[in-house]
Image 1 (cartoon, rainbow over the protein chains, first blue to last red):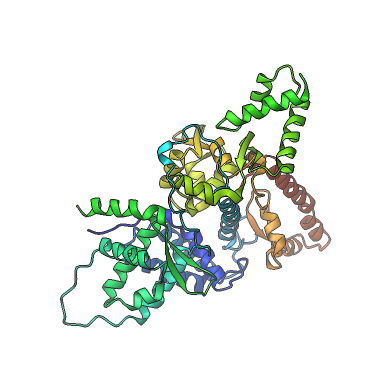
Image 2 (image 1 turned 120 degrees about the vertical axis):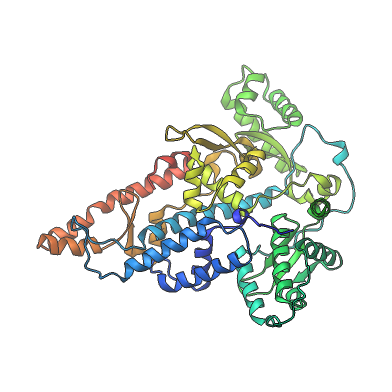
Length: 258
Length: 246
């Protein structure tokens, strides 16, 4: 069975651009389009290679960047017919990025409110006697900001770079299912509170296993069965479990496999 | 009706209600009590709970008043109601909600324009969680559905009303914050243009340096006031943002 992850739940091309801008400490008002384009395409290529359901939006953004790049290459003195100064070809992109960024900022604040209001309880009509289920309280979630898809991809890129090249001439491609890897991760998270991203990959025998593992991680993140956290930009990435959902994900996977 | 009696009645109403009680609802029950007295009673109740260090307090939320437990007791409540925990919203959902809150009524296509990705999945899950609702159809080709936020949305984030939303930065403001951003400005069409470049061009085109700075300086105050107006509007009523041509 192949998993086709829909990237909708993760982020879009603007997120990737903002991520690259932040990572490379690029001045958003003076974007070096050529190098940004190159890096952008490298990520898109990787998403495609993983056979993630790469949304047309990424392709479109790539085309837009290429268009801007080509316009920047044109001689400066080219004027519009009306004699207006040629606007900076990057202007529209910058506007869109800023526009998106300000909503992202609000979204972050909403996230904080969500966090704090989860601590507040209100009277509810159906006190749901069945729901009253004294038991061990769910563990406090490990804090630490959640990692974005692109940070994950970027880490995965590093991992792949270390991977041993596939031995040529040996065609015994093991059948590793994404669902197996998902179960494996969940199993291991039952014994340990968290798993280190790089350690996990170092254990994989082949490139194929790594890719499957990566897809399994993405799927678990999407299902909210695990959280991928990182304390700061270059700190180690780790996987932690989200207890409330583990059981339901396990159930869902049994049905999936049938 | 004595104030103390009114307060007791209000307290009993708050106690039984499973959703925020609006001022209008309270007023209907407590007639002929006037609005002023009602508000005073609510304030007094609020202060009393604080003073007595009660386990709950009175919160203004989702266009009404409701009793809520204090955050400090969350671990114990969670122990009792293990399954009451609901799914947290995804990053995509939070962003979409932020956009809808400020720009409502807004169509799917307009949301997608801002986020740069398809909004199908997010919108249906937000509808399912009743964070947003369909508020009408746009008078445009295809008559697309328009979405707006709900009271459940306000409640979920502990917001009094839409004016309680975090402040949405103004584009002009964002440009001013950054040294390099100052080279740009937002023109009347909402497009971003390089500041200064037009000025240079004016000078060469007009052949007179005097007209240059003036022409460039003129849109300035207008821009500023527009920007100020926008952030005001955003603070008091995010909905009005929809008129902005961005």
